Image (cartoon, rainbow over all chains, first blue to last red; front, side):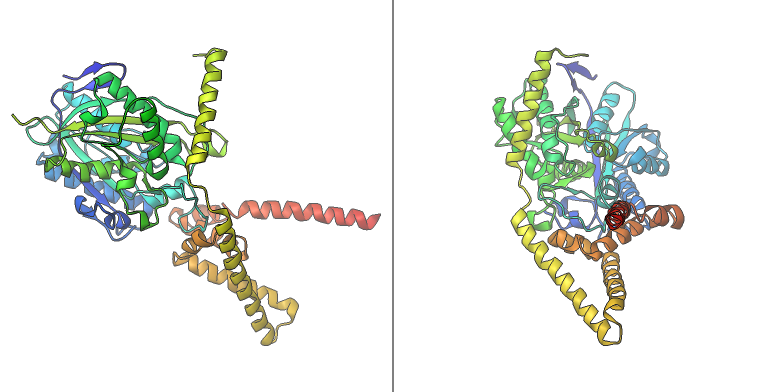
Length: 337
Length: 157
């Protein structure tokens, strides 16, 4: 039964990630984690005629593959909790139309991956559902189109800009006997230190990640070294060292265990500026790479801290600063008896 | 929830310190290098324009007439490179060098038109193609109006 510990952490008793799947685009397929993804597309359009459809296709494929890998029949899945970055979260909702699974749409910008996983775990552990599919997607071209400029527009980006990951990650969460357990979720609060540059999301989001990580340690009584790996979602080359430094100032030495999904996703020479961003950054790394590491027992305890910048093109054009959020979920292998 | 003045001041100080820290830590665009690249690429585009102009003069256009086909050719090439997905890569390297000449203007219109093609010809392409270029036209016309006005007034005096 799920219980609340500390201010904003939920402790789960018996929830597992039964299976997960990831579908990605070409650039992600050329990155260092290529072997950890289920489906890699060579075509940014994924055989569709619009970018939006391409993102949905990735989502549908990840969903189908995850359900198939879990062995759970689609009819017995009680709920789908999903989201994405586009206006009115169309990718998630249209995928839910395709999936024909009861659906709750969520939005937490790039923190959606862990927001949906935390909600799924809480509903399962409190007995409201047996199986839930949880996931999110992002696409480089749809994000550019909505948040920045047309994809083919020739604007020069600063070196601290980030590259939105094209992909979708889906997990089947439920009670069962196999798969790593979801043990804790720490829900973050919105943090805004007044940064306004929409290209510099890493700096804007780092304080939110730090806030949630510290809250998680306080609520659970854990320390950085209790984990084999702690990852943030998409702080990338600029936000990652800032977060590390701020955590150290607060007495948490993360140096041995800390990494960032936005840095893990690509090789530095892939032309991605400071690194990856987007919902799919944390989703693809967690549901592809980290799940594989857990399965092979290379690591046993992971904390995923998905970070989201809750801005819109309207708010930054109106000169508002960028409110940010981070949600943390602990995923662990059961101790061998 | 209203905050006391002390809390507010403390918070503002925290924000100010963090903003300074990020400015110090993040890699800034290499302004000098970018300027050199912009100068070279912008210069190359302009030289190519001059070459085109000389060509049009050589096949019988007067110097005054040759400007129009020159600009049309540059616009065509820029639109083609945009459609082929190359122009944005050139621009990431060249910066202002490819943005300032007429080719940059053509790219902003073509890229917006391409991007919104899936939303239909009228509301998609027609409604969006001047999304970026529109402000150039608006402020160009406004500036021209005031310059014209000043010129007329000076002549009257």
